[in-house]
Amino acid sequence: MRLSDLVQDVIEAHDQPGVGLNMHDAIKDLCLRADDDAELRLTLMWEGARRRIKSAAGAARRQSETADETDPTLDLFGPLHSRYAVDEKGAVMKNPGDMRRFEFRKAIEIRRKSVQADMVHLNALIRIDNALTPFWENDPELTVQQAIALYRAAHVAAE
Image 1 (tube, helix red, strand yellow):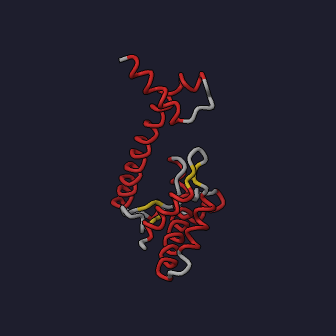
Image 2: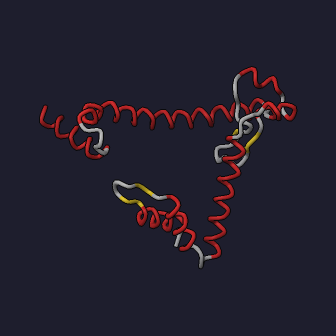
Image 3: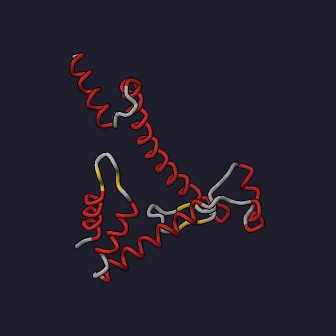
């Protein structure tokens, strides 16, 4: 079985309506299901290690005690991550002080695309919140799905 199919099976098995996805149980189940397949275990280990390293490398903020390791003048422009992806796949991450101009611009392009995608998602969440606020003001215990059903009913009735 392909890893993507196995992951989807685990998500479906552990995603409970109204409760959500218990990540701990899903991960435990995925690992147990992959236990008999050495190639699958290696892929899981590789992907997990890659994500952990990328996350730790990219999210670490420059600290004043490490200022001697990098050019402290970069701090003049605001807080920066200690490393940024300089390729689309995120396989290469560099300290901004060590980047050449083309790498720095590539990091900007990658971050811009990421922020734009995040903003599209955030704006959708905000639009939903704004549309459903009147229903939640009447009943704050409604789920999003329940509030959308009321929203649809109100808008169909108004047409």
